[in-house]
Image 1 (cartoon, one colour):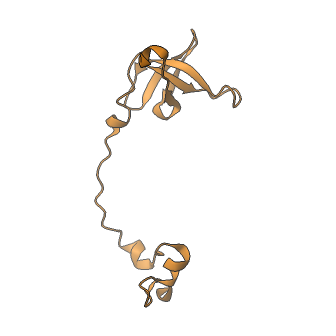
Image 2 (image 1 turned 45 degrees about the vertical axis):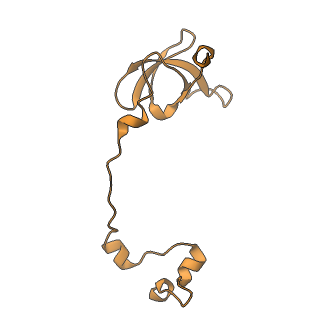
Image 3 (image 1 turned 135 degrees about the vertical axis):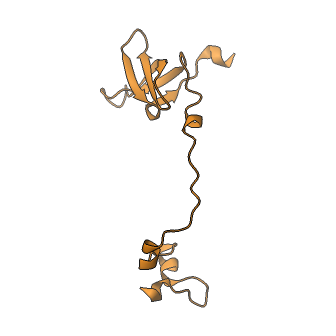
Amino acid sequence: MHYRRTPLASGSSPSEVLNVRQILTAIDIIVPAQRSRQPRDVTTSCSSLSKDSPYFVLAYKGGRKDRWKPAVVTAVLGHKLFDVRVLPDGPIWRRHADQLRKRHTRHQHK
């Protein structure tokens, strides 16, 4: 194991040449890397989602053809959870932000 990780005269180890990355050793597993983890700001990813905004919503039922349906956000329930009304005059579905896609309407571009 140590031979595969030890750098050669070229500066890279045999495992690095073969796999294009360093392999993990027992010491790497025991001693975790010293990375500074910054907390993710959850609010910025969904800040553009607001009430009465037009979106496409993921429909669970139906085939590939009818997978995304036009909808409007009716309520913001949290950072990533929303109630949306399927257009026209459809039911209200509760969806995660991952299941919504921005929909651009004609009057937005003018």
